[in-house]
Amino acid sequence: MRTDLDHLPHAKQRELERVIHILFEEFEAAKARATGERKRGKILKIILYGSYARGGWVDEPHTAKGYLSDFDLLVIVNQRELAEREQWVDADERLTTDLVVNKTLHTPVNFIVHSLQQVNDGLAHGRFFFMDIVGDGIALYQSDDTPLHTPKPKTPEEALAAAKEYFDEWMTSAVDFKDGFDFYMSKRRWKKASFLLHQTAESLYHGVMLVSTFYTPHNHNLSFLRKQAEKLDRRLYDVWPRDDRKQRAMFEKLKEAYVKARYSKHYVIGEEELTWLGERVEQLGQVVHAISSERIELLAKDAG
Image (cartoon, rainbow, N blue to C red; front, side):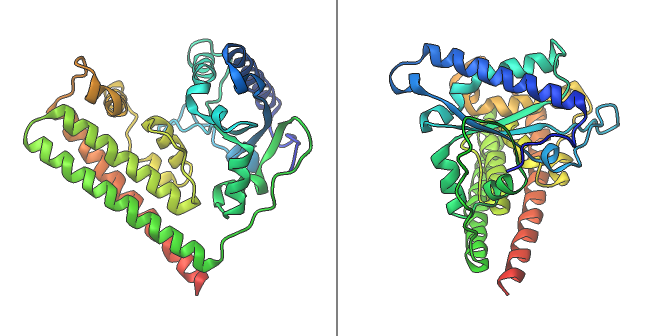
């Protein structure tokens, strides 16, 4: 795996150094509070993948679309328990604060965490996501030079069968949740409707990632899933308008519905907001269906 960053501007290289420093600092702070086996937790590798590893990143914050590529990082740890997202909340919040408030970072950071076993299992099962990271990724940190397992790609027939299975499972799930949303909208039960609309969108994002890469993060955070999925196809980015604060706030309400619509008496959402969100999720479904169908068609050609 590559280790050089010569293709990146010096400013981006310095930013990555700060990001790595923050991840380690917050990891060590969390480990100091841990008990038992987690005290022996260790970061084994940090790998840059995606557009900043391949080249071709987008840095257009001042254009009409305002698109800005993230630093995509895979953090590999020595224990499966350390890969749980709750273990990394402080690191996530600090990176966001340095980007939005302190302005010491200028590039958004998107990181996922997996144990070494999870990554090697993904390679052994031919998951495109992990195979692409091994092929294109750049190791920013390695505790030693132990290589990851050699990828074992699926046969074309296996890849086609898996994509079809994921498509059927997750599109059916999305349709079922959308039916529930429509029912509760008709009953004017807005909180129930918002939770089911969240589940519709979540199913669509999981589905398109699984069909495209055979991988999806185990996460219910709709913002996180949206950012992960939008890297697959620019059409997914265009689903959600980001032109004004009201539109961004409505998406935030949809994200919060997973917990607050069920458990918080303070969660308030109305018909107008849900109607707009429902239209966006409907468009999301159409885009996911198109991307997934194109992917399956390509795999079918490979299977011949």
